Image (cartoon, rainbow over all chains, first blue to last red; front, side):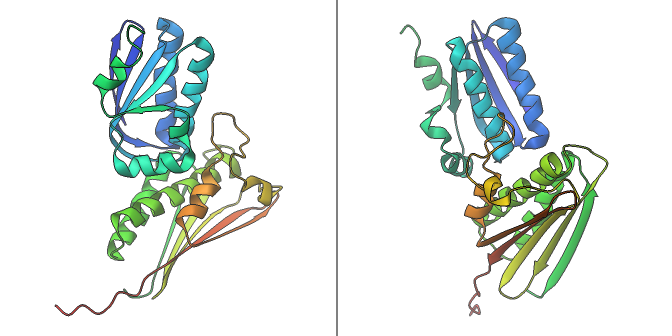
Length: 114
Length: 145
């Protein structure tokens, strides 16, 4: 799994490339938690365009970061989800809790200046 | 496709989950399954193998996970076995959102159940757990071309 990181003020954008399973989940968790704790990041945008696979371990990390940000007044946003990945997410009920956007621009826009 | 049997034994390390997925994906390809079916088989195998490593062996890397695939004319049977701690209450473990770890979603068995036609879990404390998953294969009509 490769992570491309972009930080703008208190927003962390992560473009994830690869498979999200129990092996890579740990790396993703640390990458996000570090930024939340060290830089005070409050909005995390995950671009899943190049994610080829996700299972419950991957979904668990995403839900876990949502739960971590919530009491801090933060937000987790997901963009560019490929259809086969969305199907798995839908079955887990994740889209009922977390906001999905078609692309990064829409995710940045929502909540800005509000 | 002819009857076929494949057994893969591997160390209980996280890196091997993707190898188990690769194997099932190539079998799915040989069986001419749809991309969607293959994707679902990959998730089911990933969940069963992850459970064996995380729960059966409590993430101890010095153990062995057994994956057995059996292909017949009309079905694909996937057996994932560990010789780990076992599950005390299988029925409870299979409930949606049941998880012993707050970072996990408790969806492993839900995914296995949703994506496979049959799921059986046999477990004995301190002996291990065997997950048997079956996918019915459609009889492909004889192609005319």
